[in-house]
Amino acid sequence: MHNVDIRNVSLGQIMYFVKVAEYKNITRTAEYFNLSQPTLSKKLKSLEAQLDLQLFFRSGKSFVLTPAGKYLYEMWHEMISSLEQEVQYAHVLQEGKTKSIVVACLDSFDPQIFMIPAIRAYREKYPNIHVRIESDAAQEIRRMLILGEVDLIFSIYYDFQEKELEEIQWEMLGDTPHCACMLKSNPLAGRAKLKIEDLKQSDFICISPQYLPEYSAMIQRMCKAGGFVPNITKYVSSANSLTLNIQGSRDVFICDRYYADLNSSEHCRIPIAGTDSGFVMAWRKDHLSPQLEAFCREVRGLFSEGEDSVKSESLLPIKGESGLQKNA
Image (cartoon, rainbow, N blue to C red; front, side):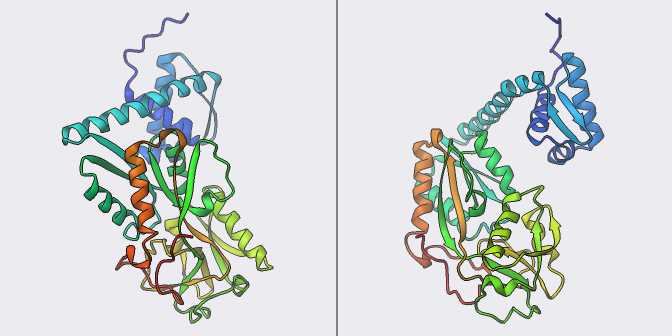
């Protein structure tokens, strides 16, 4: 056996290793920890030297686990997750509460529409339950749920539409049509509703398949149903970037009424007939605690009491619709 002294291996080094193993990319991991790429690379090399192990196969900015690295990741990522949960629970105890749940929401959702009302209603009924909220991109919150870092997520329907996740239970709420978001100067902006074929001459802005292949697949499916191939003129890295790239009078991107438009005063959103969108509430099948079940009931209640049960002054009106649809 190797005589390896691990006393100088820090928890920080282990956390860096675990996150690089999950992202498989040094640049994204460096951004996550707010470190420079060279600094993070040095920390990983230092860990490998201290352990006398090669943990990754490196190819440019891509990092793939070696057999030894894969073994340590499987052992360590659960430990890190457990440590974080234990610290969070210690804070819950310090605040005089008894239980906690962690909820993650897609960062491009408008939280005023359903997240904040749901959490407010839950806290009023269950004041002893601590609720912690995270927000990130669709692929990241899905990863957090699979790894048990959060108890429940709110994500977009298309991200679950064609997936088979055996360990995940999900249901669709707040069903609504897709919308085309565009400048008010767009020739289509005066319409109350659109058909997908009306967008045939439009210039589409799309989230890159590199970051979220489910989004571009959704656009391809929609346009195929309309008998055309979308003219994608710009790819962006996140849903939040879509709204910032609407610049020309033919530019459009696809969203729905839950999208938090960062430039709503310049834009309009028009529903597209015959399309289905909405948000998904998802949790792990093996982790549905009583407090989480109660939270799910509160969310369902908001979408079963009618259109007036969820209100938001910040919601951008959509042409041709008077309010939120009931859950089917």
